[in-house]
Every structure is written in C-alpha cells, then in structure tokens.
Image (cartoon, rainbow, N blue to C red):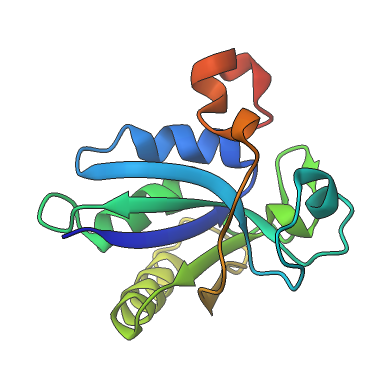
Length: 157
C-alpha cells in the first residue's frame, strides 16, 4: 500500500527530479496546492492571485522509505529560511511548505522542523509552513519530468 506526501520547495522541476531518485518512491507529480482557485494553470499560479504553491506530490511505499526520509531530502534540497522565494525565483508560489495528509504526518513534520531549527544549521528562522493538504492540481504535462526532458541547465535552483 502506498502513501502520499506533498512538498513545496521552490521551482518544482528540481524538486520533482530529486524525489524521483529515492528508492521507495513510486511516482512524483509536479502540481499546485495551497490556493483557492480550482484547476489553476501555470499562468494562473504565476499571476500571484491564486494562492497556490508549486509542489510535488510524492507517492511512496512506506515499507521501503519513511516519511522521515522524505523530509530529510526536503530539508536538503532548498533553503527553508527563505520566505516566498528560492534562489532567483520570487513569489508566493515558491514558498517552503509541507502539506500533510494525516495527523501522523503533521506530528512527524513538526518534530522534524523543530529539530532542524534547534540544530543550528541556519541562523534565520525556518519559514516552512506546515498545513493540512487540500486539493492537488497536476501541472501541465510539459512540467512533468521537466529536467529529464530538458536537462538541469533549464532549472532555476
């Protein structure tokens, strides 16, 4: 039986590619979550009016990889102290976010965030929001496996 995890860590192209490499990850889809507009397009999300973040929805086998291990990668692949940006990408759609699908995920995510904050790696506060997952809208097909199709030079991370 598989489970779902949803993360926002900036441009979803690089985030998707990073999670795809993990053993135990069954699938990763780029998409949008956390906003108020149903069925947004990339253009809608980039207008900064929908409230959505660029996210990846990770389908994983908890017998092969834990939610904790997914969080470990999430913290490594972006700067969780930046508010509404990652690198050169600026806007609310690039916010650091964990969209939890169960009370267990929420507890694990909060514990992981607190440990990161206490660990001293970052001098600024962790800005990552932890929110109950709402609807996930799959991004347009040209965003799926983007780096596999176009190469790492095409991403802004």
